[in-house]
Length: 115
Image 1: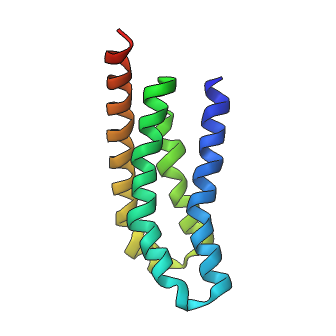
Image 2 (image 1 turned 90 degrees about the horizontal axis):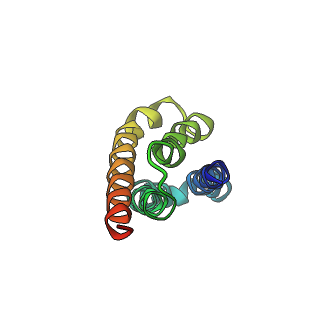
Image 3 (image 1 turned 60 degrees about the vertical axis):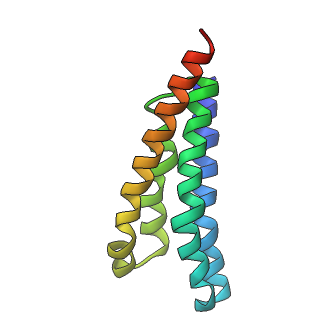
């Protein structure tokens, strides 16, 4: 059961991380604000809410962090060039931090509520 949930989370993460770069390639450089908005707001909220849900509902702990945040590196390697990776690689640490906070808080709140 947990493997299916993690697989679905990985697929959702890849889709969420890859849609803005694809739109940016199709729409041209005028869509660069979409990439910035997605990197700093949408993805951070996703990396907080999704692990919280996985920890709270399914008691998934360590698998939620790679399923939600580490897949960002794959997206950056596929779609971006070296300079952009250097600029946006700092946001990757925020994703890991928010994922750890989300999964820890969701797991402990779920554990307290189920007692």
